[in-house]
Image (cartoon, rainbow, N blue to C red; front, side):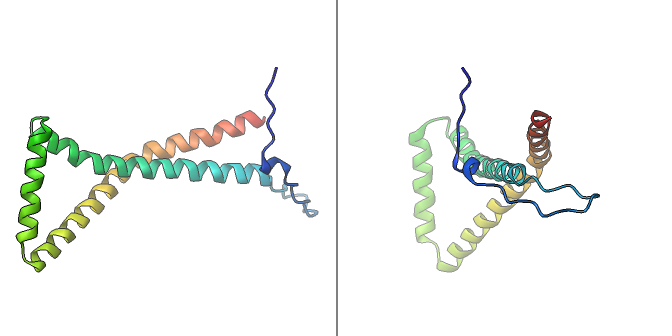
Amino acid sequence: MALKTTTLVDRVPTPTPKPTRPDRQPINWLALFQGTCLVLIEAAGFAASTLLLVLGTPLFVFLAVAGWDLGSLFAQLGNLVDHYRAAEPLARHFFARDLQIAFLIAAGGLALLRMPAFLRRLDRRLNEGDSADV
């Protein structure tokens, strides 16, 4: 028994195509909408996974340096907090700016490294839909 589902998008009537010239094909609005949704979902997943990798890597490194002991990790973080609190406002500002720049460089570099694989995967997923229609 096949499962047939009807979504809100399936209920929307497709626009009636205007008469086109013989050299042009009409636009398949449903395929365009589905392809756009696929690209947006894949791009959101790519961005989220890249950010989680960039944010998780320092935690992994700090845990490895602390010998996988959470007590040592939090002691070092407490030491960092004490130094940050005792620092001058200008030094705090420069430290915060340096962290922001390091985060942007790490996120951008990782995104550039992962981009070719993401584009290949996206192309493969988009072509799956084309071959299913035939």
